[in-house]
Length: 234
Image (tube, rainbow, N blue to C red; front, side):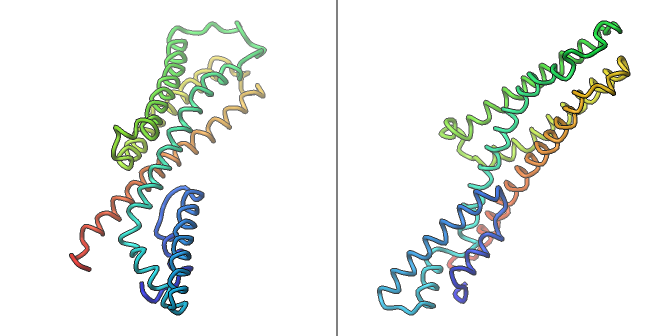
């Protein structure tokens, strides 16, 4: 570490971190600014540029020491972002989904079975329930953080919970969609069903965010394990 300058240290720190790019870039920029300020103070004290940078880096800490805290912040940011996405997207889906069928040219041309109506209603309720749970979880990253001490663990739970929910929600939505087409074949030519493509893209993005929750939280746990294995006094 002593042979690395500030720019090299910052580049290595960025490479070691996993999480939302903007948050990661902000954290690395803050670290670089802190190192630069410390190095300038050592320069004023009479050290050479190289020695000043090395002293600042040594005091700031090795990657093994600083990465766990930075990675924890990134994991929490990813968990908060995912919970917010789901809390906003699911109620929006509930409100907009009926618009795909509004003013369609085939209302009343085919009676809807009670089973279909029950499944469609269950899908709507599932969307609302998922949005409500996500909103409650979002509180855990904000006001409720005083009670939820381990934000990384909460992010990990968000990842597993969101992926499980998305599988169930996606299967239910797929069945409703296919069943609708089966009852009204003309629906395949209804332009507003193109909105279904946008919904599936949003679904895929939510799944990606959930996977990132798992990746960032696991990265933080892995960094902590490296610290715990570090020899005392090293």
